[in-house]
Picture (cartoon, rainbow over the protein chains, first blue to last red):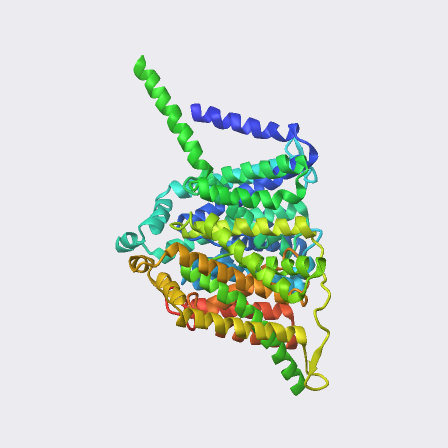
Length: 325
Length: 289
């Protein structure tokens, strides 16, 4: 009952949230929502212990696939977005055959190489990928009405509601996966790989599963992005974007489900709202780099460790208070 | 046709020279520190900007600018060792992430100091060596080739024939055993970082008049360096040099006969192929240098 109340309040808060913001802040809110899904899906991948540098390109696969089927074949946009996710999962499954022969640093570099090859293929083949200029005038989400609210998807507020529902649903699935026996096996594959293998766990299959599922959700986030901004090109998914995703995950911490999401939200607010409005445009990469370095030096367990500490302190306080009674 | 092949080969030798300087530095740092330095491309960029400042802006001789570039970038290497890699010794992923942060800072500083526009530097020399009508080698490219040969030979002598080099290799192989023998790990780490970063700085300084200097020039360089060290075997200095030559020839010839994007795809595919078939590289063992 209490949980229901909390989630109800969160939902009401999210519905009201965009109305207190300026137009450009509403746009940032849409990107933030999409990035939350991206970074949450990245965490599923890191659960099995592998750090990929190709995740943003996989996101791009979803964006390109969804944009192309809606543009060339006239597929209904929500179906196209779903198709984008499936395409990303499929490409990831194919890539897993060469990539999962590698571990650790080699996987990192291998995933980077695979991602760059895909990006260069988009650049090289003007048909159908549009070359270096990419795809333009991608079909937007068609408007519709649910009686009390008319969705006009050129409005960031409408698209934010749409994204929030899609992303919320995806996050719920990701959460369910993590708490299921499959998710526990992912943990085992990372921390106790020998023991897991000895207990009959097929390591390769579970790593592939995590990779494919994480990529599928990244693909959906890419498709959501493509149909909102309407134009994508190979540089929208380059290594610099990947560095941002990595920063969110590292600064937030990857031990908990909410860690990377927290990192993404805090850094986006800091980056877009605080730094941009204070006029530090040119200094932003410098500050971002400094944040990355100081968090790895001084807060190696991420922002989530601060939250955990706060929760523990609160609980201890409560216990002491009830003991005093 | 023969002319074209000869000219392309000359271009490839030039490319191999500066690539091997960068890749050898990267391998050296990895060998001793156990960290993959993602900021290595930006160290190269810093070397180029040192030349922009000292040679183009302050009108000092080119040679002075190159030495200044090497020392400056070497100092940056020492800074990274002290500020990032030493505190993060027990955290290999941490060192890598910290170097990404450092890369962003260097890029931002270059943008702040010099702007995003490309810097064009007055040529050091206009001389061109002509072998025939169509086969020519600009003198400034020859400098790079000569510098690479001299520096890499000197490094080889230093590592294989001197006490310092012996200590350096020992601490790369087994830090604890080396420390028991009275070798200072911190000392060898500093030497390796200074040399490794300094080599990238020299490569940047020497090529500055030949390329367009901009804050993002490190990106292509680091990708190339990664391909080279993977193909050569992450721990092997000799492998890095051989792989630089192989990569430079493949990339230059494919660029000449097809186009640049196909050449990039070929290089990356080569790396993936090596990773799949023999992840320790063509010339490397699984251990560090």
